[in-house]
Amino acid sequence: MSSRTRQWLSLVGIIWLQSINGTNSNFPAYSSQLKQILSISQVQLNNLAFASDAGKLFGCFAGIAAIYLPVRLVLIIGSTLGLIEENEGVESMEDGVDIREREEAEEVRVVDIIKEEIGAKVMLTRLDFWLYFFVYFLGATLGLVFLNNLGQIAESRGYSGTSNLVSLSSSFGFFGRLMPSLMDYFFSRTKDMISRPASIVVLMAPTAGAFFLLVNSSDLSLHISSAIIGVCSGAITSIAVSTTTELFGTKNFSVNHNVVVANIPIGSFLFGYLAACLYRKEGNGHGKCMGMECYKYTFIIWGSLCFLGNFLALVLYTRTRKFCREKV
Image 1 (cartoon, rainbow, N blue to C red):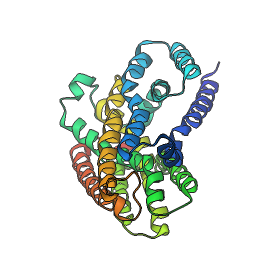
Image 2: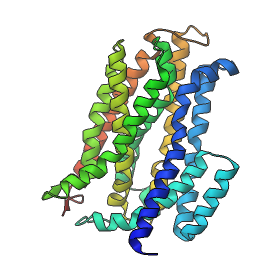
Image 3: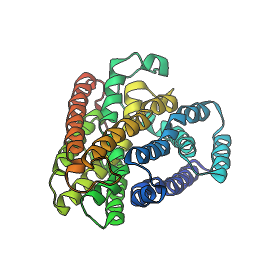
Image 4: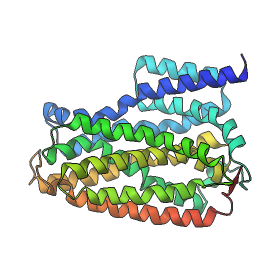
C-alpha cells in the first residue's frame, strides 16, 4: 500500500471514528429529561456528566499503547472495546492512534522550532507545562462544561429549542476544530505563521466575553455565546495537539498530550459542581430552577476564570515565543 493511500485511509478512518464519538455531545440535549425521569438533583446530574468525561483519565494508557504496540493491535483493542460498549476510554484509545498518525506530520510541519524531547515526569516539573495545563483547563475545558450544562441553561431561561441550541454549539465546535488547519494552509503561503500559544491567546478573549454576554436574557445572546464558545473551544482543542509538540517534542507526544487533557474530567467535576451548587441555591433547594438568576453568577465566575486563563496564555506565549517561530 502506497504512503498516499495509507494517509487517505487514515483520514477516512479518523473522520468515521470522530463522527461516531460525536454522540458524546448529546448529553445536554436529553439532560433535562434524564433528570426528571431519574428524579435526581442538579448535583447528581453533574456527577453523570463527570462520569461521561472521566474516561479521559485512561488516555495515558492509550498513549502508552500507541507508542509501544503496533498500530494494528491498538486498533483491534479499540474496536473490541467499542463492540462491548461505547465509552470515553474507547475514544481515548482512538485518540492515541490519531496522535501517533499525526506525529510524522507534525515533525514536518513544525519547522525552525527549538524544543526538547521531554518525558512526562520531567514535563510535570516545568513551569510551561503548568501554564499550558491551566490555560487548557480555563479555556477548552470550561467550554466543554458549558456544553454539558447547555440543556439546563436553556431550560432555566425558558428556551424551548434545546436540541437546536446543542446542534448550533456542536456545529461551531466542529468548524472550530477545522479552523487551525485552514489557518495553517493560509499562512503557509506567507512568510510567517502565527504560533500556537499566540493562537490560544486570541481565542481565549472572545470565549471569556461570551460567558459575560450570557448574563443578558435575550435568546440572541444565548445563540451568539453558544456559537462563540463552541468555535473557540473546538479550535483550542485542535491547536492543543500541535502545542504539546511545540513545547515538549514528539517522542513522548502520545503520553504527554494525554496528561494535559487529564484536566478535562477534573474541570468537568469542579466547574460543573460549582454551577450545580449555585443552581440549587437559586432554586431554593428544589429540583428545578427557573430564571436568569439560576446561572447568572456561574457565568460571571466562568467568564472571570476564562480571563485569568487568557492572561496565563499570554504569559505562556511570552515565555515561548522565541521557540515557537515558524517559517515556511
